[in-house]
Amino acid sequence: MTTSKIPVAMTIAGSDSGAGAGIQADLKTFTVLGVYGTTAITAVTAQNTRGVQGIFNLPADIVAAQIDSIITDIGCHAAKTGMLGNRQIVEAVAERLAFHKVAPLVVDPVMVAKSGDKLLDTEGTKALVQRILPLATVIMPNLPEAEVLLGRQIETAQAMVEAAKALTDLGPAAAIVKGGHLAGEATDVLYIRDGDAIISQSIPRVDTPHTHGTGCTFSAALTAYLARGLDLAEAFRQAKAYVTRALRHALGIGGGKGPLGHLEAGRP
Image 1 (cartoon, rainbow, N blue to C red):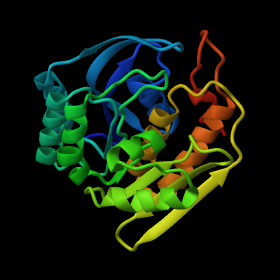
Image 2: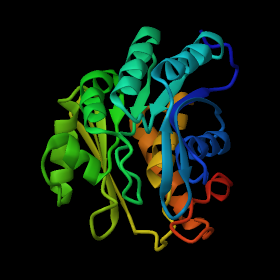
Image 3: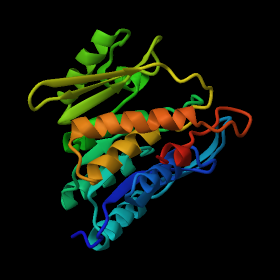
Image 4: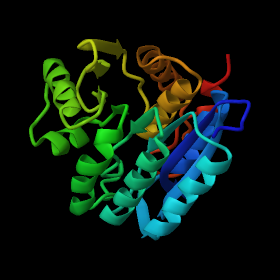
């Protein structure tokens, strides 16, 4: 049931106290892109631009209850998962997403923070592959995450295409491999299994050290555009454009990697 008269997007992810990534980045993105954002918080982190100082994963039943509460009242036009923390949370989220038949579903397989802090344990990663990916409309890992999921190195644009195809063998209908860790232009590749379609987008790299929350923002933008009814290919193009604008307006706050300029990126 969806009672809202505007598109509703749900994020199932962790809280970033510095508000550059996680739930906070997702809600900012949803708002400026014209959708109503709801949340199922999986973890609370003590986090700033320098790194993660502490993590508390919520009980899995509380995470599941948040999803039920949202879906049974407000509804959901599209959802994304971000930081899930551990196997128990992954399994609870998978069970509720399947029960409510949530779709489209964007999976951002958050494993390690930009600071290097681990955000999903080994058993949680296994459960993500086994339980969440078969439900996904699209998975969108960065290169290190894709390498973990596939067990191989990805060092070229052609390897990114091959990786995107291989990721769909794990269950998702489509995969976006983000190439921000490669040298040269910022290239992202979308592979859609139905139709064997490949879409690649390359843009000049934005020269800024302030990139905290880039992955969360990209996946949230994709989710917002899907909630608004765009097809996956167009949602990919629009989300890439939004995150690029947000990087151009990145904020140099704090003493480390600052957050993106979500508000400025949403203005005409």
